[in-house]
Image (cartoon, rainbow, N blue to C red; front, side, top):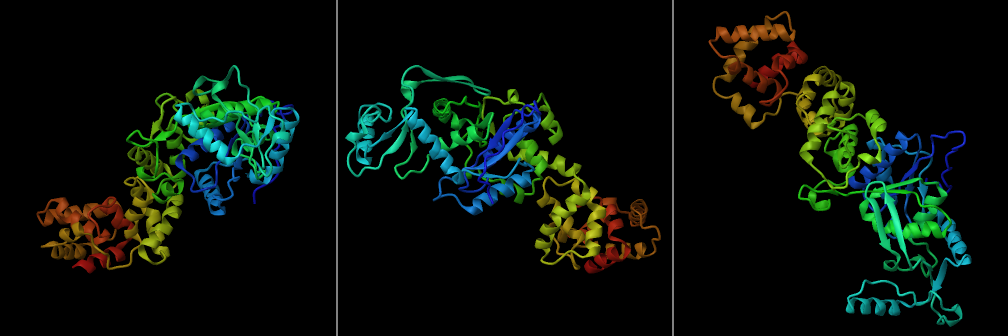
Length: 482
C-alpha cells in the first residue's frame, strides 16, 4: 500500500552529508517507459552519490487514468532494474488535504484568488486570442474583482496570483540559465471548480513537504518549472535545484514512441536484457565519463554527477544495447544465468527440465554464454542439453546429416564405444584420429557430429559438448540419426 505520510526530511544536523533528496514521480497510467526508467536511475544515482535520499512518489491524482496495475508495473520495473527507494512509496492522491490547505494559505496571503469565469467565457477568450494571433492565456479578468460580483451558480476555480512584471529565472544544472518574462505566464489554476488540486499545485506542495532538494526530469517539463518556481515562492519556499535532461530519441532522431519498438522496461526484460546492462546502457544515454562504456553500478554511484549530463538528446540504439548486454552475460555468474533461463527453456520445451538436463547446462554455461547477447539467445542455445531425444533438427542440421553422414557417424560411434577417457581433450584426439583414418578433414566429421548431438549447425565446441553430455547420451543421440 502507498503511504499517506510525508517522507521525513534528512537530519542534516547529525548527518551533514545527507542534504540531497531526489524523487521519481511517475503517473500510473501505463507501463514504466524507458525514459522514466532513466529519470529514476539518474535521480537514484545522484542521491546515492551524495549520500542522500531517493523518494518514490506516485502521482495518481488523475483518478480516471490511474490504475493499480500501472502502479505494480512501476514497482516491478524499478525493482527489476535494481533502483530501490527510501521509505514507503507515496500516493499523491492521498495527500490532497495537504494540497488544499496550501491553497487556503495562498488565499489568506493574497497570493491566490477565486476565478468565476465560465467555460463559455474561457472558450471565447481562447478563440479571440487565436483569431488575433496572440498566445492563448487567461486574461486575469477575476484577478482584482470583488467576489460579490460573482455570477450565481458558477463554482469558482482558484488561481495563482502570479507576478506580472519582471522575469522568472532558473539556473538549471543541465540547461544553464533559462529565463521567461512573467508577462508570458498567466495565472494558473490551482484548485478546480470541484475542489480537486491540479497537478502543478500537488507537485510543488509535495516537493516542499518532502524536502526535495533536486528535481531531475525530462526537459519536456522545463516550461512547467517556471510556473512551479513562482508557486514555490508564493508559498514562501525556495525552489529546488532543477536539472532538465534532454529526452531519449529513436534512431531516426524523433522523440521516442511506440513506433520505434520497445519503449517499456518490461519489454526489455522479455527481450532477455540483464538489469545491470540496462542500468549501464540507460546511464550512458545522455551521461558520460570520459571514454568509459562498461560502467558497473558501483562505479556509476562513485562517478555520477549532473555536470556529466549533455544538452543533446540521446538516441536509443538496440544494437549497442545488445552488444553491451552480451558483455554482461559473459561476466555474469553461471549459476545465476541458469536460474534466469530455466523458465524460458521449460516454456520452450513444454516440460520441466530434469536434473540431468540442469546439470549439463550448468556444466556448459561458460561455453554457452560466450555466444549469447541476451537471455533469449542463451536459452535457445542451451536447450539442446535438456531436450528429450530424438532431437528436433534444424534445416541446416538435416543437410549436414544427409548423404554418407549417417554411415560415417555409425563408424564413429563404434570407435567412441571403445573410448575410455571421456574428457574434452581425449575426445578431440579420438575424433581427429578417426578422421585421419577415414581420409577426411576434421570438419567433415565434426559438423555432422554437431548436428547429431545438438540438432543445429552451431553450438559451443563440439568436444566440450560431447564431454558434458557423457558417453551414454552421445551414443544415444548418434544412434537416433544413424
